[in-house]
Amino acid sequence: FIGARVVFDMASAVPNALLMRSMSFKKLAVRTTVASLVAAVGCLTLLWLGFGLWALAFSQLAAAVVGCIGAMVSARWWPRFSFSTSALKELSGFGLFASGNRFITMLSVDQILIGALLGPAGLGIYSFARRIFQILSDLITGALSNVSYSLLSSMQTEREKLREAYGFATFVSSAVSFPVFVGLALIAKDFIPLAFGQNWTGAVVAVQAFCALGLLASIGVLQASLVKSQGQANLWFYYLVAKQVGTALYVLLYYSWGVDALTTAIVIQNYVMWLPAAHMVAR
Image (cartoon, one colour):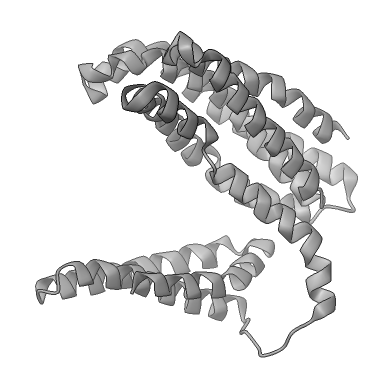
């Protein structure tokens, strides 16, 4: 039943992309809010009527259906029974690499290897620290990533405006991210046990290491947007592949030193791999 959601998620991909390209983020927000409200009301109603787990399944499907219809209405785009070979060829090169970028980003090679080599305890500490880093990054730069990609894509032929927009976005991201990650690194020794309990004291060093990575991530998310917005998704794909290979090698080399040393080594590896990204941005 929930699997039917895939159909509507895929059908909404094009209108969502059109809305993002035109930077109609208000329409996207309204669509998401309405879909969430419909799903919540439907779920609570079915729970009250005694449908149990079916209520949760309905909420998932309802959110996808309403979100799909809302995206099509907002973008004024409807699917048609037509097929364009020329359009497919035009999109295939960029689209395949863009999909590859998304797949590699979602593939957690580090966690897979750490779980296999260090067991549940080591993976738990590493994943805990990584999750805190990911939550903060999403809160700070998540929206900026979507906005910057659309904005920079619209400036492909305006190099000076592109340079100014990228520089300003990098400044804003750094101004917000740096104090947050530096502050968390300084208070992590007291904050982690206080907020999550004494059982997570062993994750303090790993959290501090990921805070150092957060300084880089606040810039890296804009680097990815810039390179891909200029039609160079293939370059970013090869870069991500190299990073994943490097991460796997670092895990294999340093896992025997423990979670803290391994996490620090992975952060250092990310800083080394930042240099090729900086070179792409400079180009």
